Length: 95
Image 1 (cartoon, rainbow, N blue to C red):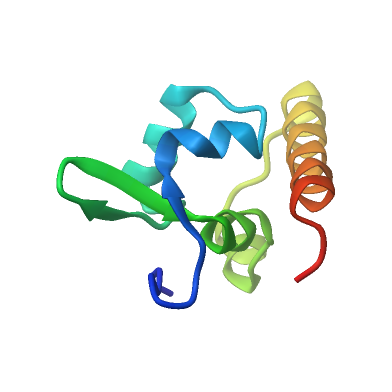
Image 2 (cartoon, rainbow, N blue to C red):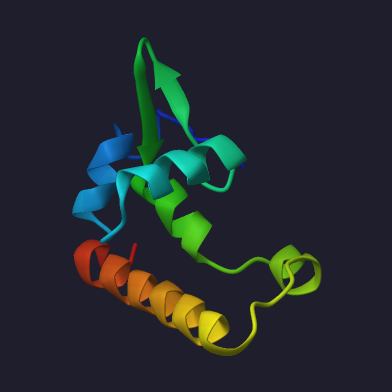
């Protein structure tokens, strides 16, 4: 799905850090890989709060295509993902 700037809340990519405790390199990596939907406005890279929510919601293909990390890495990745979802829900609430 692409960002619809007429109906979604568009924000600069780096402002996602106000919603989630993530690093700038992580944001850029997610944008470059397509995991986080982005659009360009001149020289600025933009995303939307709805795109961030879509990224954090597990999709049906994730369960079948992504290999699961093992051991501590799995626990840490799962905990970070769950923490990010809870933090986003606390900041944005329900739509």
